[in-house]
Image 1 (spheres, rainbow, N blue to C red):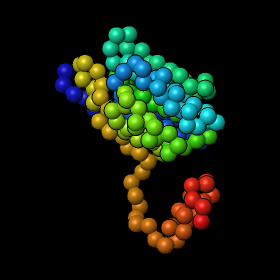
Image 2: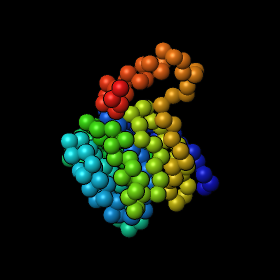
Image 3: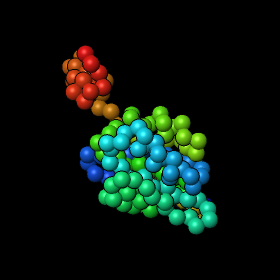
Image 4: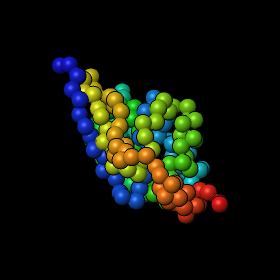
Length: 163
């Protein structure tokens, strides 16, 4: 059969962020849930994890049914084993990313973003593998002084810098 490549666009709410990653064990879904509830209890989120063996189900957890369905639906389109997706609102990936990276089962983070995202998947007779992601768009140039000012104001506006 060989290898075929596919571009899979992810669909998630405009006001949401996602974290897409690879892990290795069914326990991942529960550990990611515990990380979310422990780090950002006010966040709304849905988590999905694709098993790569046994029943090969997409396991789900979360505290928002729409976001859970969103995470599961995107993983159905990606169709790669041992993949997880967190879709979150009322929080940013920066609030949970280090904890997710430290999770024993997590092998890799492909992206953490609110940008339009496309997943590049290699399909084989055995299954699919994420090769990489397209996160947002290509740059239009190099930051100038006025762009720096806007960036710094934005970080203060959302509460990530004091002065």
